[in-house]
Amino acid sequence: MSVFLRTLAAASLLITLVPTASVEAYGRDGHRIVCDLAYRYLSDETRAEVDRLVALDTQFDHFRDVCSWADEVRGSTHRHTAPWHYINQTRNDPHVDPEDCAEGGCITSAIDLHAGIFADRARADAERLEALKFLAHWMGDIHQPLHVSIEGDRGGNDINVLWRGERHTNLHRVWDSEILLDYMAETWPYLAEEDRWQPLVEELAADIPLTGVDVYAPLAPIAWAQESHDIVRSRGFAYYWANAEQTIEPGDAYYERNLPVSMQQLKQGGVRLAGLLNQLVEERQVSGRTAPAAVSGALN
Ligand code: ADE
Ligand code: ZN
Ligand code: ZN
Image 1 (spheres, rainbow, N blue to C red):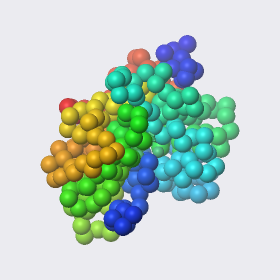
Image 2 (image 1 turned 180 degrees about the vertical axis):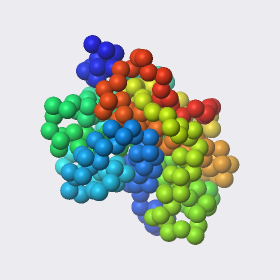
Image 3 (image 1 turned 90 degrees about the horizontal axis):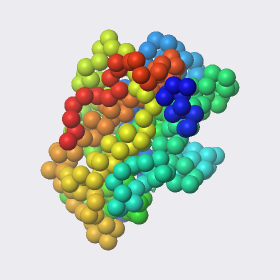
Image 4 (image 1 turned 90 degrees about the vertical axis):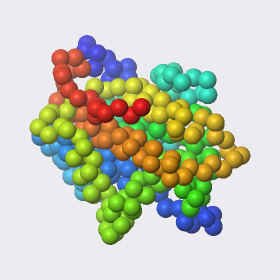
């Protein structure tokens, strides 16, 4: 059995000023951006399969629109999936391992699970469509650094923040939404808020030199999670020493320094999602493929 198949087998007052993005996931824009970016790098065969499955969906019309669905159902029809949106490390364990996964599952096990179901053509279309919707969402979440964080503060949701001297929010939301929303508002103030994700996708895509290259990415959720976790432990992230008792005040310098990190993670998520879907649909082996599994350009 190939390594790939084995991997698969093993496998408030001020609050009113805060945008109403979901508390615990990349905001709707983040997921839409990752998925719309990914869609551009799907092979013809994979795009046809993705389009075929999405056309069966009764709620959504386009791939980019299915990518926040997992947040809509985590508190209702799919409660058991609530812990699958993240993985947390103990404070003294900087290395992400499969053993760090919570008993009820976590983001890395969920990626393994849904990649396996999506890849299995023997399964019903409805099951594979649901797996695709989950998988596309997880690939966004795992690239939001605080979805691979240190246990005890709900991924930074309990870290109070006065953001850029203006908005009371929390650190998780800064990384889910605030950085992105600020960048879009500052760059495209003349566009309606709900339309700003489009030029951002164009801008990110223009920055990814993959035109004419088929993108394939092996299933590597632990490695992707480790990258996110390394970011949250980095000095510039201002998280490791933060606590729930003290409000931190990341200002313009924090925004300027971390904007490229946030953008890089969106690009990485998009390219890897495309690469993974291409790999799963075309049943490529991990080895024997010289494929860009990641966007080049150092983060650190
Ligand atoms: N709840 C607990 N840990 C979390 C995390 N890392 N991200 C989102 N929600 C969480
Ligand atoms: Zn999520
Ligand atoms: Zn989140």
